[in-house]
Length: 142
Image (cartoon, rainbow, N blue to C red; front, top):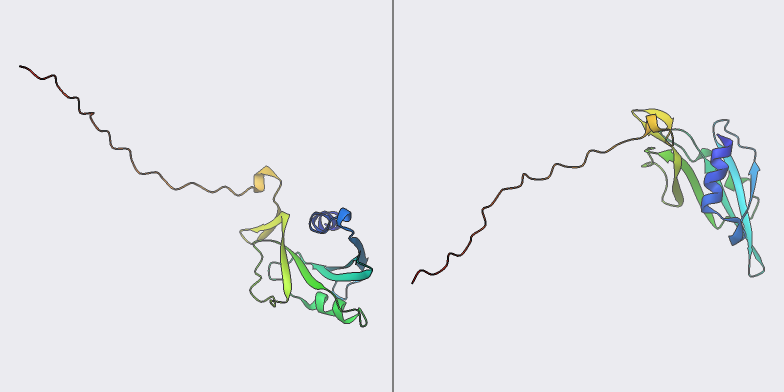
């Protein structure tokens, strides 16, 4: 799972934009925490990021990470969660990023790139076509 989390991070925080990623120990076993940093015009920009695979994620690991940054206020706070996770309880200051490769289907965490876990949506039915008879002008009988 750690490999997938790092792929998601690299997809949103690209190295060619100057981002470097460093994993830091999380006080919560289930969540992974990272500090991302880059230099912008001579100043270092830091971002706090947590990855949670819970259906109802919390920001406790992210809050602990921000508190441990010791005076280096992060430029932003991000939480990466699987698709269909319940994020209604996440504060507005935390930006939520949904994973491409994992999601919840019927309450279970599944790998979405496997065909058996793909979610298909049935398109709505189109209204029935009404057959019309073309009107043909008859020649004028004079």
